[in-house]
Length: 411
Image (cartoon, rainbow, N blue to C red; front, side, top):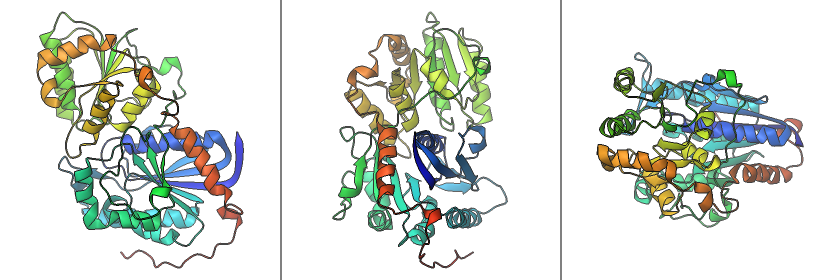
């Protein structure tokens, strides 16, 4: 373990839907503190359940008020009596105050270049002309090129990325997908673009007495946070009802954001089937996934990385709204032999889903199709952090900064 004394890293995760952003930031933060002594990481998160996860020593989080993303892609406040504009002002202030008081050497932003509704831009402006290294981390797939261009062009996002960020990390190998495809990049921005590879996952600390009583072999069905996962769960249950001779054990993890009426309907339906176990939520899903014979999911980024990390056979049924991200990832993964995929329309036919479930344990493991360094994302990130800091004379807390004076965010 190397030592980087007094280095501070601030991470931003807007977290409006599901668990993906927080879990990705947490994996990166844990890898950093495992690699370097003397580094402290704070994650700014809007997740409602950030406190349900364990964080390693020298990793902590600052909770900002939560905002929920609706199925149509719009946002709303969770509190019935708090306006969205009021929530956004509070979030903006907390983010800026955290950056001012924490004085990071590096700031890592997850997925949203300017943050939710532009809430990060005042903080990025604050860090302009300071020694702080600003890094934007992008998923292997953001959306379809057409959708991303339609969303980003009116907001001049590429120009702002060029102005504010020292580095852009792509959390995937360059052979898989270009997340900025069809976007016109300014001269010099491509030189700051670095494909690090997928983020390899490790098993969290766990005592066996903490685990659920599960079959020795099973297929795991997971939909991340579960906010839009009930359809997938019911498609699997419909397949089992159709193919009732197949009693291969199934374990379903519903997720913390599934609506109560959907949760109860799935439990009732599963109670009439043999060898179907229902789990509401498990913060250490890696253990359940690593022990599964196969995985059925929607192909969110974290599930895909875990499938590859633990070499699990996978069947994905991706959603296509409000983004094409999951569909592109699952389609591309299938092209490369890493997984199987059904469209939601195909999965809604019980006989088709039943056949895919029967075949899943016999499919080829994804490790056969991975190339060297495909899963080196966390290692590449740590190496790049060391490189970026090597140009600084001393860490932020040991030097006197000539900070640009930026006015307080208007409230």
